[in-house]
Structure formats: C-alpha cells, structure tokens
Length: 234
Image 1 (tube, rainbow, N blue to C red):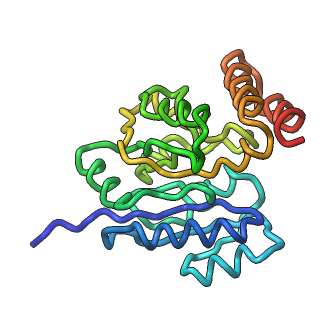
Image 2 (cartoon, rainbow, N blue to C red):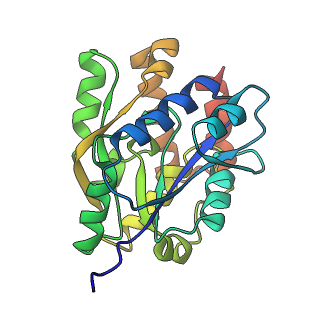
Image 3 (cartoon, one colour):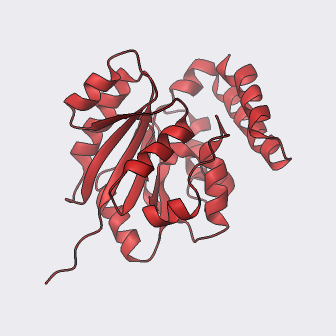
C-alpha cells in the first residue's frame, strides 16, 4: 500500500483585489502538478468590489475575517485542513510545479521554506533585489516570496503576531529562523512590481529598509505602522 501524500492548504489574504484574485487563482490551477492541494482558502478582510464573486467563480473557498493580513492569515490557518499551509499574496504567482516542489522538500524533512522571487519588471534595480532572495538569511525574506510551513509548526509558533499591521511576515519568519532550518526553493514566484512603479523604486526600497532597521533597533508594531503610513501608504 502506498504512503498517503501530504496535503496542502493554500491561504490567500485579500481586500478589494478583484483583478489580482483571478490572476493568482488561474495561475494556481495552471501550475499545479499534483493532487495534493486540498483547498484554496481566500480570506477576505471586507472587500467591497467583486473580489469574493471572482474568487468563488474560480473555485476558491471564501472565508470572511477581520481586516489585517496577520489576522486574516491566522484565521485561514485555523480553518485549514491541510498538513502543509502555503501562504500566498494575491499579487504573487507561483511557478510551474510549485506544489510538487513543496511536497518534495517536505519529504526531505523541511518543515518551512519559500521560493526565490522575481518581479514582473525588467528593472535592473529590482532584478538585484530578486537575486538577493536566494540568500538564506532572514533579512532577505518577505511575504512576496510566499511561505510553506507545516500546520503543526505554524501553531507551535502561535502564528502571525496580529499586533503587526505591517512587517508581519518578516517578524514571523525571524521567529522561524531561530527554531528550524529554512529551505529556499530555487524556482521563483513572480510578484507584481506595482507598488514600486507607483511610488518610485529607490524611494520605496529605502523606506522598506528603514522599517527593517527600525524593527532591529526595537521599534514596536505601532511605530512601524506609523512610519509605513507616513512614508509608503501616503
């Protein structure tokens, strides 16, 4: 008798992403290569556009949560049934065979990891930061690279810290690095460069770097969010 394959729950937090939710769900369907994907959970934080309608039309299960990406991802994890959780941003597209590669690394003993990342841009500036995602250090991690983690380990770490309105992925991954070996899969997800194109590439990367530095120097979640509102969201 063959050993049962582990199952994957894909968790996508959204808020008013009617276009991108169609793109990512289509990409998941087109690039999956196993039957291990148990469910696709779209966790909605209060969309007022066609996000929910589009998600359901493309076969996802929509769950409604309080607003906030950390809270939405935690809610998704609580309601997930898969042995492996795969957190995916709505504007990040997984590579061909992403599910197969996650399963392969899981079978090798890796409980957590991510893919390398590239932007949908020809910018040399962004290509440099894409290259940095192959470096296995927590400073080179971010939510846009997606994240796979066993459900058991996720709950052992108490999930994402909901005090963080921004930087929630980085804070969580820093805790992961202290506890378990982290796997960087050589295939790359493709993420949107829309924020860089809208706000200026060098300017935006500078402010992201400042948020990293402020956190390292002891800034609390509220301070990081205030900096984000002033310099990035404005």
